[in-house]
Image 1 (spheres, rainbow, N blue to C red):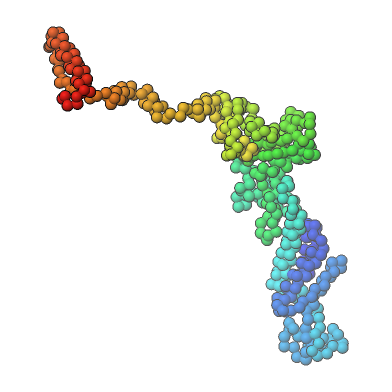
Image 2: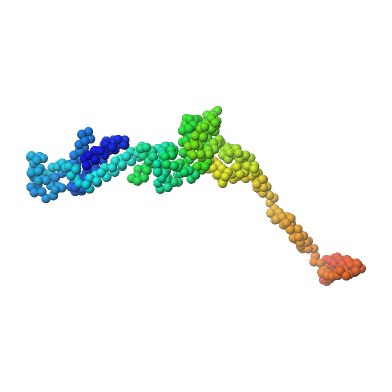
Length: 433
């Protein structure tokens, strides 16, 4: 067992950066646990370790007695005098014990505790190394797949890339190099101590800071980022010094700078947008030049914007499945409603409609149904005039002669004259009927 412990110390010292004190404490704890398994849980076991000489000694307190009844806590006076000549009955001596005599089960227990303590110390070291580094970018290699996520090898430790932090359009292979953003650092017994992300928008910001010196030095600032991980991202940039083209600086010569970032993000497209304090101009920039924005109407109370674009540019402004408009809204923080010029013209005309809804409804009804219009006009005219005297209907058959038609016409004219006279008499004498 002693040889196994010494070999374990050499191996772990070579493989880790843990100090010797950590191994000494771990061995002491392991030997105490093994000794208590033999001499009792309450035994006050002491351990002395000299790594230079490879010397490990264990001691357990025992009481000097004439007749030994408990091996774990008592020692005969004859044996005690060999250790100390002037020993007396009832005296407590620290008796050295041989770890090789513990047996198989205590030895296995000691080995488990040893490796557990070393692993715990290593985890604490990793935690202290990474704690406070949330938001930084680290490089790892795909090692294995676990719980739907990915375990990354960080050389001295591991990182876990959860499924929700993996772009849906990406499929990584074992051994692939990935740059990830540190989300959290945990000091727990299970699982990887470092949690990372490939979908966080800050990953794009840190990659630009690494690739563009002007951003690192503060000459260009990243003002806002909107991202659809794995597909497209929009980055708003602003120059802090005159004479610097923020967008051109980030793009680089022949697009080399932005292309390096796109390659690191596995082909995710990046739109660089010029930041503006004028929200109308900023929204137009966010939608892009291809959208051909005509005008932007702002609703400050609801923080929404109505954008008018040419009819043939409407699909480009909205983007595939609304992606361009959605990212522009996230980037600016405003609700964006995009309409074509023809649709916007109709909407504006509706805003200036005359305030006579009843007259408009009647006019629309007259245009839709001319017959109903004639009937309604007739009813209105009838309501304004006195009730006429009923005239018996005269049926004209096809066999009647022209003379009959002329007679009918004369009779009708007589009735009309009678009606006029009756109306005048009604005004003079209501009882004339």
